[in-house]
Length: 251
Image (cartoon, rainbow, N blue to C red):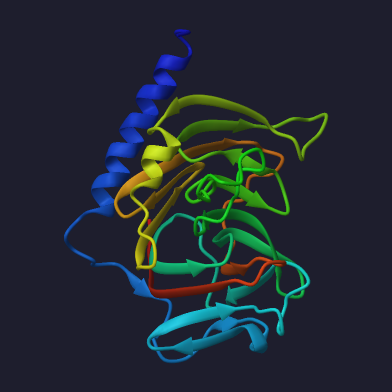
């Protein structure tokens, strides 16, 4: 391993340790609820896709009620920069995610960082007999922008590419575990606890207390200090997501 990488790895481990302690601290002091459990107050989306049911926000498309493209439920109660966001989710059908440090680029269309969550639905084209897989939950991703920056299990540094800003230079400097082993932490047909920590240019995605990815964003051409939160309904295959207990603690 190159000597220049060692300080970065030590820094990541230090940051991870501090963030993990914060995520599991017994006290929830400082957290603000973003959802009252009854209404979509402060949340804005296309009515035919979003509702509140049994204490959860439900987003749903169907064959009879499709979305032509990705559509979002946007939190209108303010923007956030450095924070710890926690919520619980269930998902059926296909890929979804929570947007953060994001912006609106069209009517109910968001661009920005995303923490994905999905069921097992990816089929191996070379061997369709294999069980479907969950490929993306927890990865470091940017919707409508730099796209796939770090897969589940990765610790990455993202740097600017001045020749092609949409294709940043990505260096994998470590791992938090094997992607398939980490996937075992995700509950199927049950509620999962998601935690996103954003602190400066450092980001952690966790599910059920397990760190799934760490991203360090040094891309000055695309980095955003703050932005909107939102939840995604992916276009195409019908999808249903449920989210509840949405709360945030600003750092």
